Image (cartoon, rainbow, N blue to C red):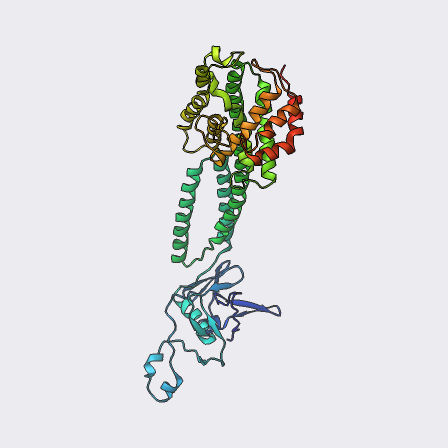
Length: 443
């Protein structure tokens, strides 16, 4: 008997499998290891597909007639020819043994690396296969388990989709832990029975599918959250405007006043943002917040008596002191709402607008007497927006001014009542202010 000695390593340089049979010119030839065993007993039987019986041992093969070398069995013993020639080895050691003659010198024989990282010669490779066959320790990788793992992976993926659709996130975590645990048991039991189960056929499709589906649901969830956040902002804005409108009506103002002032303040903030002024403060979220918070600037007037709030003439000193309390009343009302939140930029901006929008750049305003940039930027912007609208509209205590006169009053207040930077922005935007005033006139 003779057989082939072909043995090819995998792409990573590791020798894991060796063919038991190989076809050549319409004939089937055994491997060198099998040929050695056939020389002892040629009575080989085909038990079933991919399984032979030889020397009372079953040889299980993969569908391509290969077997996996078990690197964890004891390696065949190597004896030096020099020791034999010198008589250092007893002849009895060879009795009842299969002996292969070969060289282990590097360069004379191909060297292979097994899965356990041991480097051995081709002679030892075939000796290991013989040892594996005789000890029933060859490892196989049946195609059944590959297909089974793929089907299980598909079922698990569908189950994950169902769980994601129902938002059973804890159940998904528990299922993932169970899958990992059972996979380890699955591998261990298979290995004990000399079956290598490539868990990659289970986990790889599952993880890829899970990643794709999870990404899809993250995108969907993100879109839903964005839509919810938008609806929430709109609801908050509606509630804010409703509360603010009550205060405006009590002051003989209209809802148009609220629309105009929040558009004025947004134009100022957007212009300063585009000019890269106050880069540490101004951003798109800030601009959106001040736009929605602006209507709250006078909610403190709800706490001012009607006889003062609606007085057509000039206030007495005592009445003026009472009127000056409305920023404080607004701040207290907003701060009560803020207690229910750890941090809320919108309410913080609303509080600053309501409390500080009567402060002046030179420090002569109220209620605190802040000076310069001690005054929050949102309050500085609100100050100009509120005064401008008061000037160009009719109030119970005054007739409306023409645009030019109102603009001159604001511009002349630069450095005294108002921040010069904000006044410069107003000068650039004054015609937009006029358009807003004309578009949202009081009924």
